[in-house]
Length: 251
Image 1 (spheres, rainbow, N blue to C red):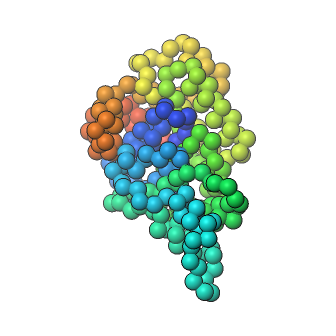
Image 2: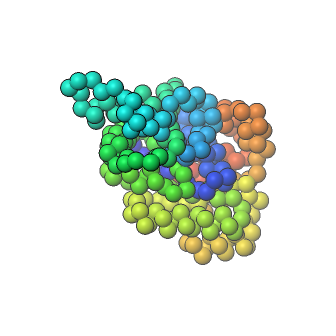
Image 3: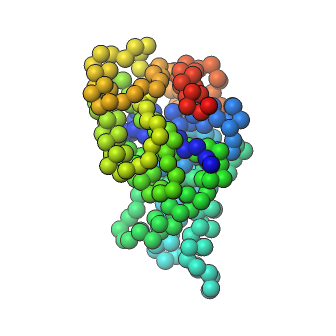
């Protein structure tokens, strides 16, 4: 049984950074193979992992619904779709990456999305860990039916507005009736101590803080240079602050 770690948060808070640092730790501690899913339409997890993205589910889905997919005689549509979904997985040494890509366009996607849901449920069982970098709406996780979320980490930066957004994501998770075992918030790009205003907002929306990640120039420099975050040294402040608390959830 694979362990599912979902990372959520509004855009710009650093959730892709957190997701990539989690994967970096899983690789370093030999908890492989890992299945990474980039469910944010503005997908950047591949760059953070040093994996070139050639295909996305969105690209494939548009081709199929536009009737440009050639279906061999006697082959079920489900088989064709699953084969195309498999072709969309970017394979690397320790991590396989699936990028969801853009949201649906006009037209009915119900059939495609049902096949995708079943495909994800089937595929993720082959991996020790699944790490999902979500969009704020949690749409793709809501399509999963057979596997609970072991750990949900909502990332916010050090602001009252971001803490409120994290609270709204927590409410959305409840509305979608997602099965979540443990849920925490990670405060990113923060001072050594959370301000009383931000802490009050976190307390108001009843969130448990897992880790406080400092502003880290190593992350900023890697982003500027286009360097994969998984290649950064193990002693950078943000990574050390994260794994010291994350390890408690993995053991």
